[in-house]
Image 1 (cartoon, rainbow, N blue to C red):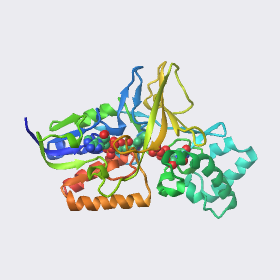
Image 2: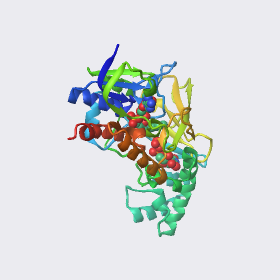
Image 3: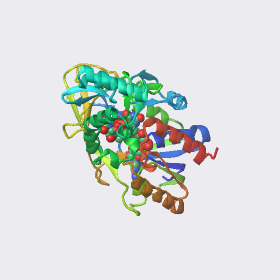
Image 4: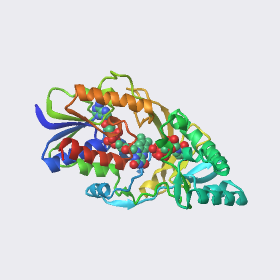
Length: 376
Ligand code: FAD
Ligand code: UDP
């Protein structure tokens, strides 16, 4: 039976689901949301494994934002559990806070040397200030440069070359700037004003976002397989823009990952929610789900992340690779879209080719609805 919708929405992640919700509740528009995966929630999807542990199928997802409007929007669909993420890096066989901070310094250096470096950092940058590793390496002060070199080699170089297959310099400085050196004893991974996890998990939150009258969801449905039974006026596409155009201008590079989930019969497996391994192993980090979900029991599940090259059609494009030449190619795809697909809206981490966190994906979705779609 033929069915007509106002909108076809490709992708049931944050971008697609939120725009569908806004269209239904704020504009009275119907939509069909499709996803080629067998679940909603995109990369934020979580579920229970056979041992009953709630885990994040696509790696640890920690919600944090400084935007009250984004927290307020999502609060319509979930209650929250306060959670402040902490990460330890394994350096020289010792576990130190990441982002690298004054405590990391005290653990790794003899006391007198740590005190000397602490004093220089506070004099140079001020207490509770952040500085990116690439900026710190350019400091005119020899002591700062020496310390920067140590941190660069021990925290950033190995991790970044594993994660991206590229050195920190070959990437946009914004990548390593996500984890700046912190002249502080605050050992939290984020300092955002809102740090909470959805109380019943991300997927439950997405069920409520998508559970509006006027929204149909079709899983295991690729846009390429959509038959003539479905018709629609407009299209929102949150998949990869190069794939939409059949790679007409060449492939946009992405980085992929393999997740190895291990479940142990023990209450707690590691000393923090996330352990980073910048210098050793083929994996970058191990995350223990119970820290994030706060569901502790006598079994615990960890996710071990192995970065790898992305092969279109074979692996998942988890990370756009932020560097100038890739953004230039993405801009050419945008121009192509303006010429040949003016009625299609592209958005999201893949559609925009931007390294969005979840809150940024929410913010982008809300702004696409208001500005691009409603013209307000
Ligand atoms: P996605 O969630 O990628 O959704 C796009 C959907 O489109 C996918 O489900 C895909 O299957 C579907 N799709 C694509 N092409 C087609 C097609 N042709 N037909 C049908 N369906 C299609 N953010 C944080 O804030 N905190 C974190 O701790 C965090 N950790 C992360 C860890 C990892 C390993 C990764 C990869 C990301 C992490 N993020 C984190 C980022 C977060 O996942 C994204 O910001 C968010 O999921 C983006 O939502 P989206 O809707 O744009 O894209
Ligand atoms: N990074 C690093 N060492 C670390 C942590 C991060 O070199 O111990 C660099 C690395 O390039 C990484 C980037 O900083 O990809 C961003 O880290 P973040 O934790 O934000 O990555 P994500 O959670 O998005 O994978």
